[in-house]
Image (tube, each protein chain N blue to C red):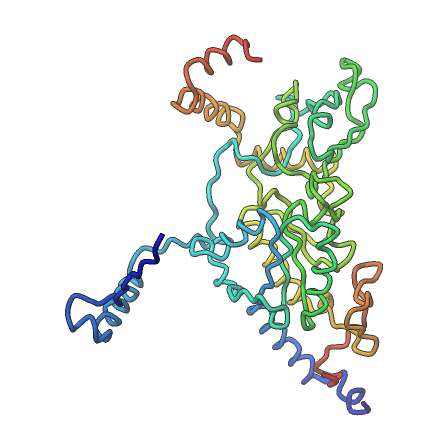
Length: 190
Length: 197
């Protein structure tokens, strides 16, 4: 790892990181976690009218291993939450989460004991979209916000590989994030 | 009941040309190719935006009267009607130089919990709360979605610049709806005379 320290601040790696982020930004493959009516609106966004393919995010991956961005669209009950957490943990880093609609973001008007009052209590959410359900424009706006996040590198989530517990809660910190911000290009640990 | 045997034959084309599957494939590709030159139905969202009707239920706003004063009297009808409990009002005495009984000291709507049903707008006796056509809201933190009084009044100021005749347009749509065949004659009569249940 001496090499890592040597090239950490060099021009080459920062440029490479920008290039990588440019690639990530324009090919966000979503993992749909559609549990309710927001998922219908998500499908409408993917359809020909609103055409999410214009943003490079049309390749819906039903395997979390192949996806970059999770769209939580719909109500998440207490029984469903371990499933969501597990799918989130199975996604390879770096990963982003969109919380779509009132129910996923805050519980909406289902303020009951069965429903998770916001999935951000368990997984780090990057972008929230209000609405019940949001229009496709809202989801596109959320996706553009994620792209902006990736562009501004300082907010991109690079996990700390050292204490990576696959099923632990090591990912969630007080601000929803934990880990150092060293680009994995220079850590060379993958 | 005895068992009957049904003979199913493979579907065949009308002629031997169809059975080769070569020409039909090209026929299909021609259809795809022709669509390249047709009108595209894609709404290129960030550049072109859909024009929404004036009674669209988007982001809330707190309206002002013609002198620029807030109309809200903090009666809390909206927060009572709200099914999602997303409106919080703290009422204070006075307002408009003590010509009114109450005014809202604090007025907060959690837009992330709101389900945009429009009950608050219907409940408001002063037409103080109304809805805009702003729907493309997405942000990074939950705190960004808590709209306080100043912000909601700011939404009004911004919205009324774009649609100075908002109330008139919206009422026009409702009038059109009432006169359309969607409602029966008795519904319209009931609404006119207020003899509903």
